[in-house]
Length: 362
Image (tube, rainbow, N blue to C red; front, top):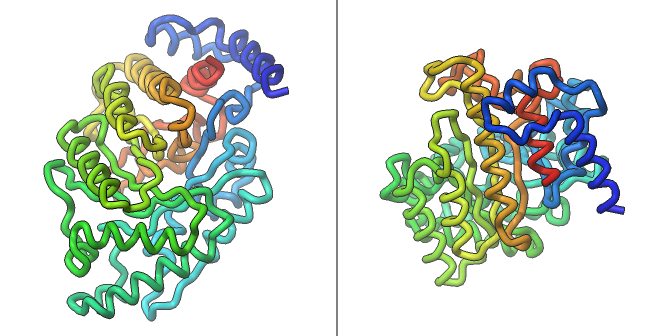
């Protein structure tokens, strides 16, 4: 049944996309006359989990909820499974948002990816009060991971256990509240071991960004993973965020994917989006930038599908509609005119959607 359904959907995409097996510029132009036929369901076209990122309050917008349940079979928690949401000033924990996401996934037969247990930038006041008290800090972090990962045991497919461990420059590991109190390797090892105890069945990831654009950072990150593997740390996968821009050179994504896969672990393209505004500047014409965006989405999917099937954990797009993208937020240095995702502000499929559908259909 999977094969016949896939074939039917693939033929729909082929007709609707008007044979966009052209160069990227031609693909963008062809997609402007976009198809009036049925919109294919992306989750049915992919041979691997195809995910999106959600915040539970977005589910109150019917078009977002509908697109999320129709097109994606995995959900990354946006921020409601991070300490910034969960840990209150008095140390109490709240789970309303994460529980809503877990309920949405359960109702729609979707996997939930937990994001994230430890992040250098996420240092609640409750933990900062314990800075310098190693024994108290150990007890607090153990208790936190046990309660959070334990709460969702059996409901999450995986966790990003340690998020973004390498500096922007790329040659060093980050210093943080966590490394200062538990050591560089120590906080990493402790977090993974506690997560394994709390949820023995979850796949445990470490996750970082700019691995495709900064080879130095990629080497540092992979050296860390390899060292932790050699010490028996239960790392089950590698997440590469892939927040890319249209100026990323051709082939960079493919090269990074091969490097990341070389350790033999499952790979998660964990936060994919493609900005039309590199470094906050519009360069080139609109059509040229949209063509480059299409090329990068296609290259990322091609590089991911070239991995052995056992290493294809999931491909996740970081958001549903352009309107909610973090790349539009001024507090993140975003541009309100950026359009990095598959659906426009009204939830309509964009040219890049049809290119992705065709790429997924093979």
